[in-house]
Image (cartoon, rainbow, N blue to C red; front, side, top):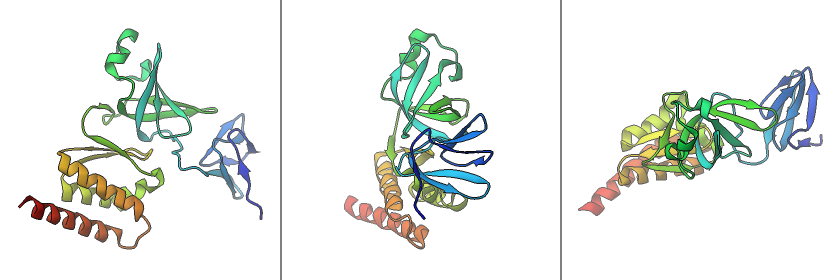
Length: 225
């Protein structure tokens, strides 16, 4: 059967459940992304052909401020669509002329996807206690589909990394990860996470990562002597 490829805004059907990669307007379902259509009897979804993150309400993400207007910050959220953080969704009251002092162009920010509106408007908010402007440490970026492997079942993988390395780590659902701590810990944490991304489909990955961290730390200890 020929695969059905669609572009954003393509009509997919009506009176069906809208799955991932779609949006609904007047009971009609449309594609939100460029990708392959997957249908069953009750639901239709679109699987993105690109590796970009597809925003979903409630996700915590790391955005990069790319523009500041008179009433909002515009952010790159590693998605085909930009995120909009309005002054009304900022955690404290500030004057419009002070926006650049609060968040400057180029800064990284932990924010929450508040809602996804038709057709490509992504509204952000900073109403979660984890939301903040990042002004220390390092932000790395991996393929967002590998984020579940970095987290692990029940948080097992990320807890292993934190325990063995002692680095503070925040994982954004859009594939960006904030690391903070000493330079040595950040470097090892970044190397470990990138190894997980490369070997995501390997068996006994947690054992491989545990061994990798121990060997790296042992090697650094020898070099320090």
